Image (tube, rainbow, N blue to C red; front, top):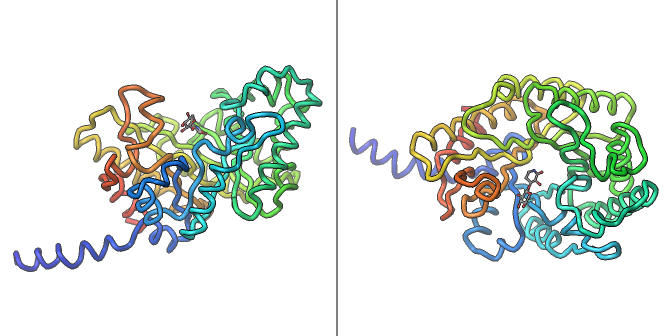
Amino acid sequence: MRLAVLMAAIFLIPAAYTQTLRDLAAARNIHIGTAVTPSHLNEPGFAKTLAREFNQVEPENSLKFGPIHPALDKYDFAPGDALVTFAQEHQMVVRGHTLVWHNQLPNWLKTGEHTPAELKQILQDHIAKVVGHYAGKVYAWDVVNEAFETNGALRKYLWSSAPGIGLEGTGFIEQALRWAHAADPKAKLFYNDYSAEGMNAKSEAIYRMARDFKERGVPLDGIGMQMHFGIKASGDATAGKIEANFKRLTELGLEVQITELDVKLPVPPTEDMLKAQAARYSEIVGVCVRNPHCTAIQTWGFTDRYSWIPHQNPGFGAALPFDADYQPKPAYGAIREALQGK
Ligand code: XIL
């Protein structure tokens, strides 16, 4: 008996682990992705783990307005291009993030005191240039990020109303989608947001916008769900409510993608917390696996060595499936099993 257990340990378990996350996801036609800072690709442990486990990458910051468009007539495509090259070398697809957002805007834009007509021209040029540059290389874009408030109202900010590009309501979102579609008709275009994964006022507002866009033929292909979570689900983001939201959106003919998943823990985490984290990863991946129109699961980084959480939430961290030495955590095993439908 003991011998049999030993044999199983030697032969079966390593065999099972030869199937990586990307193998298991590909078998289900799902992309498994992660956000990456391109300069980390020079680190062998980072690059090796990334290429082994994932078949999708997204630049964590490099394609945002400030980094990629640092002056009116200057674009910096080099970091994004480096990630595209890495992805092509390792048979991975690339998601683009993001064209219209309120954060990480360059100073020249924030202090420019542009008129709505000028802002409209700036945004149209930006989208044409960036989406055009990556046409055929980036398969999906978060065209607009975080445009709604928690109560479902539209955020008031540069592109929408301060002074905005001169369009009412969700008009600026529709316009950005149309410009992105013109620049790359084959790219899948997403609206992306946080705290709108389950059922609440914000997800309701996004649903209504999506339904209106689908009815009028606005080029919207899907909704991105950020999913920056803790181990305890808030009442409106239980697995059941996320499943219900995915269902109503995909019934409109849209895809959904999980775009920025991480599950933060107080640091240092206890064994029990790591187990609870694994359970949360498992239920989220399970929701995606059960909906045929959920087409990607992406974590916001993959190693605790590099994660935005400790900067964003001091005292928290350990949010990702690999530890700081690229060793798999319980969350990794949970994602694997959920991808296998367990
Ligand atoms: C974060 C990055 O991870 C940080 O490095 C950066 O300092 C700030 O932005 N929602 C988003 C992402 O859509 O773009 C944010 O990324 C995290 C929250």
